[in-house]
Length: 114
Length: 114
Image (tube, rainbow over all chains, first blue to last red; front, side):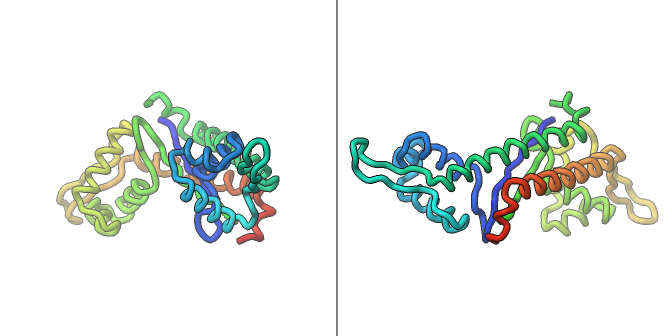
């Protein structure tokens, strides 16, 4: 036996979860919202819609755009977004560990079922 | 800002979660799977299907039936099911508290957003 968990942040509705986390992490990797959206199999307009919704719910800007230049410009995370992603992933990692410990405490003897 | 969480147990697929917990708790209250199913707005056959699936995944019997008698018989939780429900609800309560503590640690200063 094992357990699964889904955790998301709310602020007048869903504010942040695994989908947005993956999208922003991809933006950080590729330096481009367009590339990040492609890698996640979503349209550029849907990606922007998600970004705008989260910015609205979280109350701060997530992306800054750089236009032109030698690299052709791109989208980058704001410092606030970077800090937030780090906090969120630490929160999830500690939550996973805490839940695994509790699962072991209550159902550890049932592990042989799986 | 706040958080939400869904936790479920798995054993070759979903084994136990909030829905089955509510169903079994209702059986315990009403002494009848039929009454419990009605209160949850599901058919008797669907309730049995859920019970059978969970018994299969957890590996022990959940209900025992008493036929006839002055009360007209009914469905009751097995001792193993009762123990399991107690463990499950303690697990969830401690999990909720642990996650609330972690949320406070990482996002406590963002509570004013909500």
